[in-house]
Length: 250
Image (tube, rainbow, N blue to C red):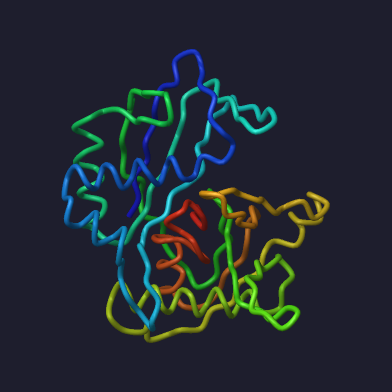
């Protein structure tokens, strides 16, 4: 399930282009106001599966009809839309409780009045789907370089990308439901026609607390297990979902 938030910006606001950390901060602050114990658990521990831990939520970029990037900042000149998604009812309940009570979003120096909060309709999941990114998809793996293990961020044509996405979704499914899906087959590939139209310019480099994270902002095709596709839709495809990566829409 996901929540759609619409907020006013008045005459406009300016944010740093790397605002993901500020949005994550809003989420944890809202959770802490509603249930401090749960917020602490999610921030410090999370849900475990196969020696990995997941927060099991993701969020979109801020969207507006009028937006302009200038250097290290981004100017929003019209109403903002923001999505938060999770398969965990407890998470959404606590977040929504504070959101509806406060009626405002504090982003940096800005206090934005929340105009509307809705729960979008859950789409019908099919074994073959074409999905669009609401935030960049990140998939990373450790690789040896000059005798040392380094973090490698996958590009759209990386031969291991599809399998890494599949394994990641299986672990998330385990974290949510406590078991593997009956069908764990999945194939993932970015839209090659879209990449060609963009002349290959589909990567985004995001600074998150001083860490440079490379993601891919591109529609993609996914086929296979309905359970895994729904898992990706609800808590994000790829890595670093709780930092604002991997959220998609139909």
